[in-house]
Image (cartoon, rainbow, N blue to C red; front, side, top):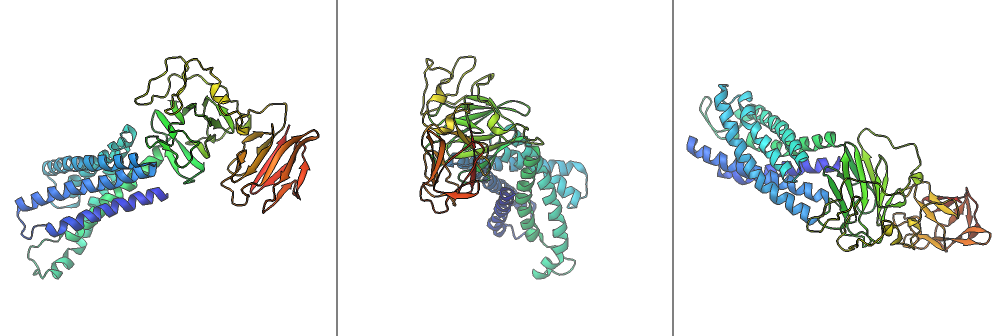
Length: 463
């Protein structure tokens, strides 16, 4: 809801700014030629400024300078073109309608095409057909409401405006300034509002950031290939973590409510509910881990499967085609892998190579019946499994199990390890202590089923 209100505010502010710039230039003498020229300039500028503002905010919300600059630049260009086309088409419709001039129906008919084309322009600035259709719908509704508000407020404030301008009762005078301000504000705000509402109602799949910078941020999966990475060009840009490759992974649309997660081959790997994967189908509620980020995959009107997330098998899954990276050679095999920019692979590598590229990471170990492991039972890491194959340090700056999101955990909080008697946990002089089954400990041998509390996260011992 916060991003929707931001779009509405920015759109309304752009309309107000345009009015403040152009209203002082409005002709003092009402003549058809002068008013026609001024209206065309005002309309073109209104479309350009609203397109610039909303397009830029759309790019800013997606993340990265490229998306922001592209959205603002294309919004400016397409907004000016769309507003000009809508203004001309609306005037033609109004003149052919034979409706009484300057009435509410006449104004709505004349001004709605302006919003329709402006909404299309804003949608087109994203270079996405789905957003273009949403812009068309939202722009049409927003402009119709803005036109109605323009007429109603103009009628209400007309007598007061004439009195302030010392126009005698019954004399003709220009009273549109305040109502034009309302129209410009309503145009920008309503177009942004209804485009946002239509987007929320129409989206079928999206991901929500559960762990990492900007937690709670969402990205709609409206492209055939939705790239995840730290590149400015990624559809889902994740910045600030060197363990995230420029093009780390990709979510590929396979059909209605059918999506595939494809790893890009980066050393850190891509994990689905704590397990390394190369290619795997996604389901509602699945947790995707890329570097230090956790992304929750969501489908509209769906429920998470009854199976526990740690039980999901991470085997390769066939797909119809590989994600296409602009400017990079594409693999030719039947079941190709993504070709990341900084980590090129050769055809001689085995299919399971990405899962071996990070051998020292406990997260990358698939659960087995032999050996011991710990599974997070609460918090952002719920369902993630960590094998105890050696010293496994836990903390905000630990290399084993990083809980950087947890302010209750120390930098080096505790360590799991293996002893002849079984797995053990030892506290590393942490501030808040380490607890096993509710009892604070310094060091203790563990058994399957024990619950270890480290900071705000509880781990269950399995083996």
